[in-house]
Length: 195
Image (cartoon, rainbow, N blue to C red; front, side, top):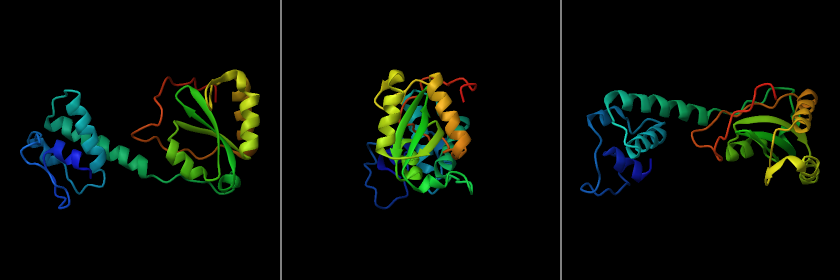
């Protein structure tokens, strides 16, 4: 639990936090609904802080909604990435991956797919193929005319066809559940017919 969250909530049971009691602003009595020992406390506190900063009126109902949403976000963030048996055994080797951020597709490479997906938090894992930096550079050149920014590409038909071919060959990678904070803003949802 971070000190600024405690101060915004107006209460704290962490003996290591040093709060200036006069400087903090307390929430209404509904704050008693928030359990500082809840594993999802940081997510809940973040939501309540955002609501307060946005000028939302914090009532018993809105605090209960923030608690439910915070617990939901916490569960999604903590869920492991399942790797189905027999599908893309190369998941533990160097891979070139294709992930979606909003309407754009990132082409990158990693030696640890699980950790990389946790770090970048894509909206969707589209495909992966065995290979390292050489193959990634080749794919960047192959789809260069669709490049938008760095490793981000438009979902043009040739790139979508390539991704679909990789799915047929290697199977669809397991999906990482979305997280409370995305590494990039969601620009638009692509048409389901593309993939």
